[in-house]
Length: 193
Image (tube, rainbow, N blue to C red; front, side):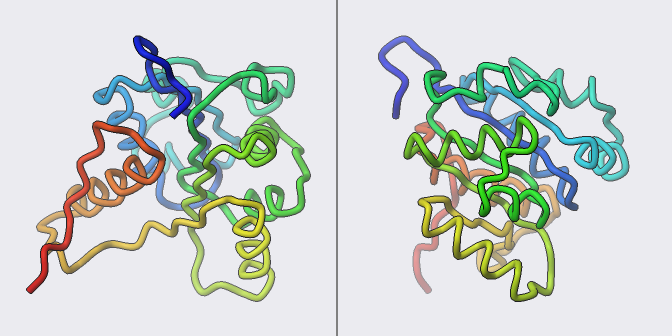
């Protein structure tokens, strides 16, 4: 972790135009509950999905973060490696955003922040949302993995016997928080048969 004693862990959260906006909302909520400082960037397509799937507009989603940026603001703090963060999570991550990250396009603040995360050797988690995958998707996932990123499709853990969609979402979000090193993460573990 980059945070020193007395500092809150600082995370970048990206939201792109794929289904699964509930993951972004719950991730932001859990980060707040866990004492993390969140820096949010949402693409226009991400805003459309958030509105359609969970009924929030851009301002409503931005209120869940400590700091929010326009995707056009390529001069924002999160566009520089000198702005220290623990990790970045893109939840959900569209195939367009995956492709931009895989090829280093940095065509908006979200993809620039992801590029910075990779170049600084920080943890980047892409919660990719698409099925079935075509060969371009798989190659882009391989490229990001080879660069040090983590491909994390939000697949439910049915062996935990979830009783609701909220529980499925919570389990996935807790696994992501644990993966990026947030001490307050509380993923449920498999304990054997």
